[in-house]
Length: 308
Ligand SMILES: Cc1cc2nc3c(=O)[nH]c(=O)nc-3n(C[C@H](O)[C@H](O)[C@H](O)COP(=O)(O)OP(=O)(O)OC[C@H]3O[C@@H](n4cnc5c(N)ncnc54)[C@H](O)[C@@H]3O)c2cc1C
Image 1 (cartoon, rainbow, N blue to C red):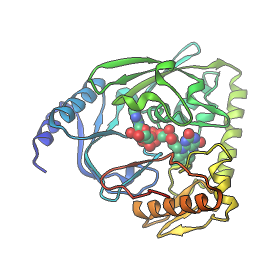
Image 2 (tube, rainbow, N blue to C red):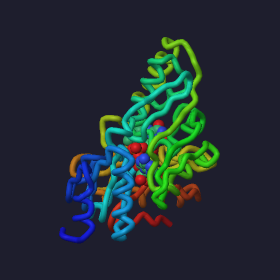
Image 3 (cartoon, rainbow, N blue to C red):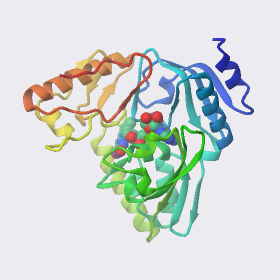
Image 4 (cartoon, rainbow, N blue to C red):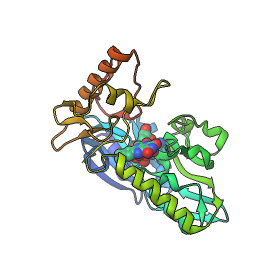
């Protein structure tokens, strides 16, 4: 690969770059092909420089958190995939206000709050994404979501400028936010409630045990594949049709949670895509409900999941 952008990317001071890097090892689905360039920006200056190269050379660039809500195409991702490194992996508290870098795992954020006797982030424990991905997706569980605790976020815009966004600017809605309108979230600020650390820890554990009991955490997946429609949860609709165990290649509908499409060894993104199509078609034929995707399909020629 000897295009001008590769030289420019390689010249960014301190930037860690891996060329033609398989993305399967950076996502929870563990399928999909390589990124032309996977880079780690350890500070805001490096992230800005990566964006400048991408814009200047007209190369696509995709932020990647912990890859727990995406299906990477078997052909991989052309251009640059950006991960955030050191500067974005810290949690700081000032009273009941906590600031977490976008690279901080949601479970770490939850534990850091619990340690300080701060309640409100218990639901984050066990969600395998980053705080950046959590803000982007308005991650939630147990009746709470990131929107409930977010005060705001700092983002790098496509214009190359830093934007300090309020919770209102972030436009949180069910499993989405306006962070997607910006290039990359850098950090978030959250308001928690002081509480007894023992009680916070107990609630965290209770939530986690519920997760262990209801989700197939031993198999690669990206969590719930479909958004819940108004009528019922997607998992219930799929389960009621007896589709647990339905498979396509090495991908199958989990026996434990019908909205999890799990990937066994050797699965491809095409296997998962074909299963998504099959499930969607069957649910539509039986119930007239059009299941929308919660996960993101990324990369070159992603599986065709056009359903109906
Ligand atoms: C076993 C399992 C259980 C799960 N349980 C839950 C659950 O209970 N609740 C829930 O809501 N989700 C759940 N998920 C899904 C997932 O963890 C969340 O959607 C999470 O918010 C994704 O974060 P991530 O860092 O992995 O994002 P990624 O998958 O890396 O990215 C998701 C999207 O966000 C974008 N993005 C990532 N980082 C940034 C950033 N810094 N700035 C801007 N955009 C960014 C990406 O480009 C992509 O479009 C589960 C997944 C698994 C595998």
